Image (cartoon, rainbow over the protein chains, first blue to last red):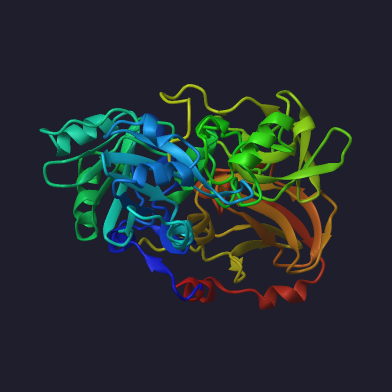
Length: 366
Length: 128
């Protein structure tokens, strides 16, 4: 496995910019260029640019494709018009999460799925296994470079590069006259867009966004930015053993749809209450950064969970984390302890998201 | 890439700690190369005063945004002083790794271990 590391079409540019590369979802990707804290601040205050070429693009076509996708995914695609997108989830038969993704309706008979890098083979295999007549899949993940431009100045940056183009509305998708795909989505909580172009043009556009004022940002800042918004990361916060109801993503599951994989499990959980809930936890004292797998203790000192994600929030200057807590311990305001190398630090469950002041605090969108 | 600073009056070990020897007291910190690799130190966990350590023991912890790194004592001895300034402002480990960003001091119990540490030129060759 580890010998077959995949490389972004932008890798030479990352190295020229001094990036440190780390393995992520089977890919070698930049974790940072200069400083995670500076890159984080650039996105919150101005504009940052991320290589997201590792993410997968699957085009689903055919006259029956929409009805089929509505049986494969939790959200309701038939509510979208062409040009609109939605966050949605692919479940296994137990209602556990295979992947979270965004589905964009391109036209009446074509939908684009943007899926997580580490899950491309599994997602595609799962879909092929369930494929029906009148539906075709095209996995074009290798053909596209992906670039996310995020931050309050992201729109102005777009206008500099594409003075004659209009950005799609929030969650929307459009094509430029020259054929690049622009999606008004992101993973930071800031305004911005995800830009897909042929792999060979990735370096050109990445540099063009930098020259237009965007700071190159790595996966380190991507992680602190998304966790401040409580956006889940598949593999950390989502798993085949947990349902989206447990993950707090019920909003993106349309249980009124007559049929989709995992629906019965979600219905039962909604009725009986989920056993655990993915809960936002904030440290209430200065301490080391919380990290995945650290133990979570209740007030009585019993271990009740482990953290699925955790960082020192650059925006809030306090430790923030998420964990699947037993439902009884997940009420907002519940005092907890986080164990860090045998020392315990006071923490409390809080309302999601941690950061409330950015432009989009409603829902995850990537 | 700019070369890391390596002061001529310090000794080093391969895990990127430095030691400044002053009589029977050694001051310990992380090298400029180490801080540049870690970037953005956000937390420093200091050892308790009086703790007895053997050379190579994990004695303090330096945390960046992405990772926690053990700081190994280069020498055996007893922790006699820690740096509250770097605990309060962990970025001192980035901005002044050989100065205000020092981490702890030990009273050396096995002075013969000093000869086993890396000279500045040997450490420079290591991080080349």
